[in-house]
Amino acid sequence: MLRTLFLAAGLLVTGCHKDPKVMTPKEGELPPLPPASGTAIGYLVDNATQLRLDDAQLKRLKEIDESLAARNDALDTQLRSIEKPDEEPGQKGQPAPRHNHAPGAQVKTNKNAARIKEVKSANEREALRGAWEVLDASQQEAAKKLLDDRGIAAPGEKSKEPTRNPDDGVPFEP
Image 1 (tube, rainbow, N blue to C red):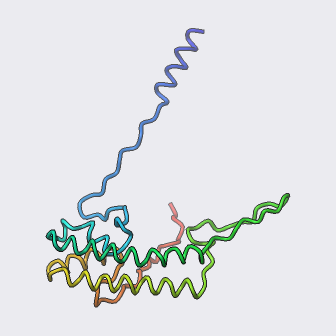
Image 2 (image 1 turned 120 degrees about the vertical axis):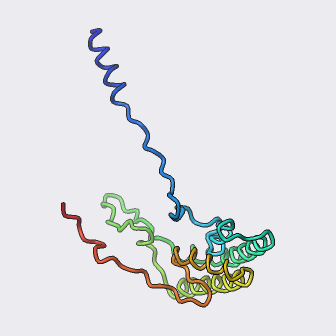
């Protein structure tokens, strides 16, 4: 009996696991979180030290960012009302239908939603042009690289098509 108790205690102590080591981004890696406001201008505000913004520039970029967020807020509300996921049918005795649970896969969209997304893109391009006027030439170069790393086209630039790795979707063979 005592031997069983010690054996159980020993298994409990040795069976405990440790929490995994916290991962922190290395120098030069992109941070995992989106910008504070969810806009391209928010990326610039979040990286004010990297862009070496002075207080007046930072204040102006925050104003542009708040204005953009306010304009897009009403558009986001309209999009949420248009692009609702399909409701689950409530039939008793029937198995639930199969669904693709990928993000956005069950969202039904239409021409109105596409138009709203175009207006949001136009708002963001206009805000970026305003932000570009606030930045000097060296800051614009740093901002261009920062936005380019996140797939956002700087003013006067064409957006890059996402590159596709030919190995994407190919099963790994050991």
